[in-house]
Length: 262
Image (cartoon, rainbow, N blue to C red; front, top):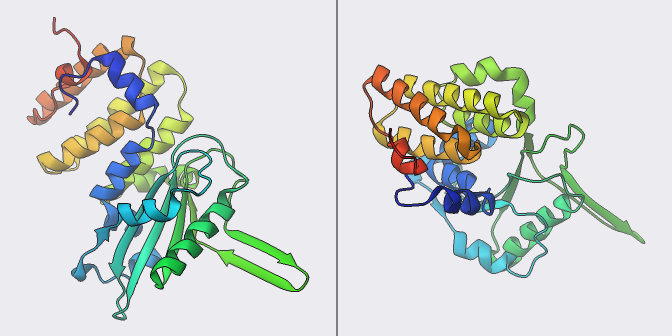
């Protein structure tokens, strides 16, 4: 919820921090994230032992690295089913165009973490851009017989467009995050964008989630799919209609949007 925040301030803050909804999503649904986008890796983790986010540790090794465009980076400590301890480094691209130096940056973070902590690191990349040909999976160099190849798993969110029905039917909560990101990138017409956003909010309410889940996912979807201010009242009324229909008055959109109720 964004109570007491003026609409202009809210828009400016969000425009300057596009990766925040992804950080919110990863912190709230890390296990579901891996289950949907990296299922093979999800199966190797011993979830019964829990996991923890190591943001300070990641900041220490990336502070002086060339960051290029902004990424939502997460370092997560998990335990493998074989009993070993593993840290998982996740880079999530949530804005801008593809970068040629992306694979090299993944390698830099990988070797810095391994050098500093002496532990296996699994680097994962989620690409949210719309360029079909941008699919980095490897950093490689060779000179005078000295050669290095670093390969990392990558998932392209736009590939899920062909599986839209599967996302709609999925019982994995992270499917809504993926749907919101795809629509945020693809839909440019304002009116269609509003209708798309309302449709996702309706789907959110129809899945039988808890109040806490609905509030978190509403904020993620709301942050990812931004609307021009003139469409805020229509969006608010649509949300109210859904809440009345479902008897779930969880989100006060009037307070969130700073709209005067008529």
